[in-house]
Image 1 (cartoon, rainbow, N blue to C red):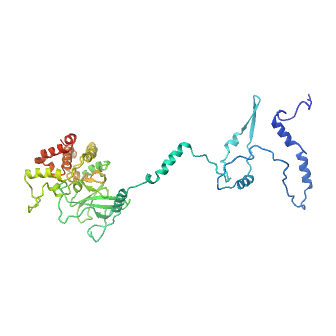
Image 2 (image 1 turned 60 degrees about the horizontal axis):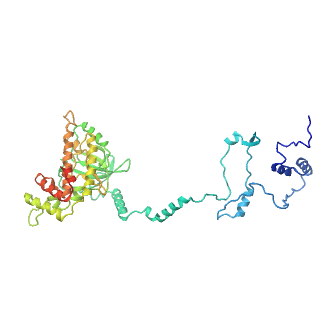
Image 3 (image 1 turned 135 degrees about the vertical axis):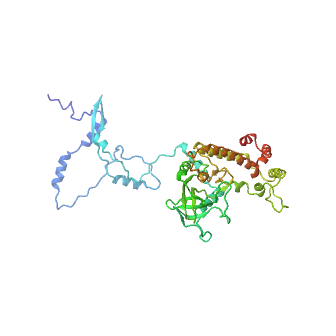
Length: 447
């Protein structure tokens, strides 16, 4: 059956009333493309010069969608330059599609191969397209601009403290001042004494051996450590190293951590060295709060030939009262800060089934602003280790009770600013003095 061509068009299903049909008809007008192309090819010759194509404008330019997009150009690019670049840019590659006719509407879809092989689009046009600043961010940016100078501000005092600690850390030894120091001790070198070496060797009140402290650099890591040397001590039994391993596991912000323990003959004798973390510019509580002779000796008589001679009880009592009036007492907030830090450190040690045994003003370091740290931990455990005992931890509960007693004495001495405050004869006087200055809660902590 043949249909009349006047009633039926051979288009691809596009109605004649559609604007798309009008547009497609306009493009198909004129001589056939194939005949014109064959005619031009037949007229070509190898001897003929290449023809110059000229583009002539016929009337007003026809509007084609997406041919002249409205772009916002940056100030650094001319619109004429951008137009030339857009004309010379490579054409957009054709994407293979397939169509589907559903309910009178034709839908076009890209093939799965085209979607999977789609590469990243890179635009080479000299056009800067960016969204504006959100309204909620403008206020925040203005606030940051006003506070830009103070956001990263560091006070001069803090800067000097950091520089001073860094200088102490990088301090190098002077061989002329300490010619007897060895160049290297085990895995450590560059030894620098942290305290003056006594001319006459004498044992400490807490540690029954002479000790000396050095700053040293680890050969392998380059880190600085504190070496505490115990003079003339020979390790008789290696069973005590079990306690060293227990101490090495203690990690607390108020305890200087023990790293390792070793014996050496580099100093000319049999010595034991305890390696701790190094905290530059640290100071003991004894040197920081008990520097005056009044605080250390309890009483100073300028008319006496021996100011350090012991005085009767009445003089000691009067000296404590004078200490309250002549010397500034510590603020209660400072004492409470010390109490919280020391009790936290003790709780950590006692929970590990160990005892500090060094709660003393000479062994508690002030490493920062009101930051306390216990030093020399684990030394007495090795020096007083009984190798004949079947259970070396049997005396730990007794030592833990001594830690609590020593903590109360230290708090009382800090509250009264006197080392004789913890003596039995001065206990009641010191408690009365505390009741006048501090709260009842602080007094109950000591009791």
